[in-house]
Image (spheres, rainbow, N blue to C red):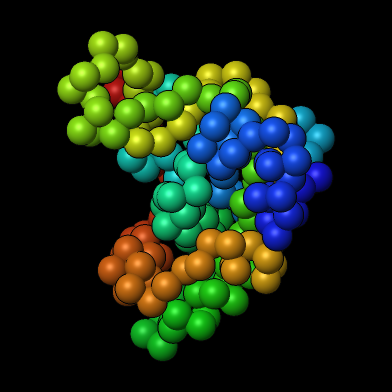
Amino acid sequence: MLRAARLTGVVEARGGSMDGPNRFLYHGTLRRNLPSIRETGLRPQRGTWAAHFHPRGSDLVHAVDDQHRGALVVAIAGQIADAGLVRKSANYSFGDFKNDLLEHGAVVVLKATSFSHYPSSSELAQAEATYPPGAEPDTWYSSEPVSIEGEMIGQEMLAWLRPNKEDFRYRVQDVLLEKRNTPPSAPAT
């Protein structure tokens, strides 16, 4: 398995680049999910975090590229909140959040060849393809199970994610403040 500190060197050793066909993608999850993910890979599903935004979305594996690490910070924060693993208080600080990421968060590393890319909004006007419900612009998705190439946890993950105070203040705190301990409403039939 690849470790974050070795990713760039491993990609180059395999004859790829971070931007080429051998590029890596990343999926945020809870650390407690890693044993199952190691055993079976990531299976397409609409987890509780994605269901908040796409109640009628397709079962997909979602991933982001290296430039969208902030989205993983927010996704992991949402999963931590949904699982009831953090109790935010008025005194909850950026340092507290980093500790929660260290304790509960994980990032799995995936090969991009297993994914389809949903173009950004600016590229979308030129695209003629349709995308499954729940896929979002400028992200990657797969409707098939995906094997993992590696994982990051603890300080290694935190150093790679590079969470910052601005994202915490303007994005993560909102996620943690929302009441996420109840499942989203079932879609109307």
